[in-house]
Length: 315
Ligand SMILES: [Zn+2]
Image (cartoon, rainbow, N blue to C red):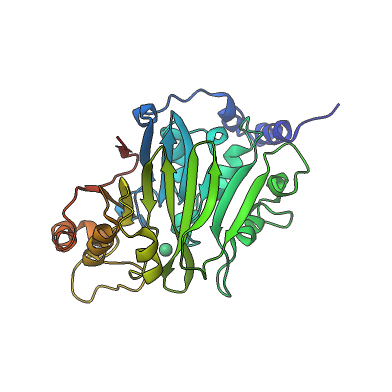
């Protein structure tokens, strides 16, 4: 008798005494109210790389017509928030990865493991940066996680199609270009990307569009690069999502992230209708008033500080 790949994995978990895992794909999880908006951003993980902020690592969902269609980053802990939000792996159109620091991709293996229990059959796009000498490309990252010689090689069918897992369509985005590149055009969802400067880390910002609305995920940025400014200038995103990792204190390390002043300048240049701050680090949260004052030097629009599972409907 043929036994399916999913059945084999479930049986393995049963044997290992992890029976509760075996039913995960069959349980009905009620979506949070965020899903009821025609278009909304939900922040799954609003934290930074250090656990002292008590938040999951960077991760966001774009809800469209009740479905979690686009996942942007999958930091540690986002796997739990994904379930709490009521998101379903089978509804995803794309997983977009801004860069390969652990606080942005540490939750991806858990999500892919969970996806092996889903009923998904469609191809799933995973798009992220190309590599460098010191960082992997997106396809190399996926191979390291779930390739035939990867750490979780029992999930290799995601890449080689040898069993009944949904295939991953893995795309390496060229980060040496400093203009807007199209990533996806289908089913009412348009996704574009532009490279950003995050020290030596190949890194991307993403623009997700639906029915004339626009969400801009700026990713992690060391400074306001010309390419990013030009690509997003006066794009008037309904929501612009940026990191809040730096306090305004003297001597603050500013190598990997931008401070409030720079965030305000970016939001003003883009003409953002609303600025959502996430990727909080405790040092920045402790200096919230000064961060806000620095943003206000340039940007006068609404500013929201996201928590895990915060929902931002796009009207
Ligand atoms: Zn980073």
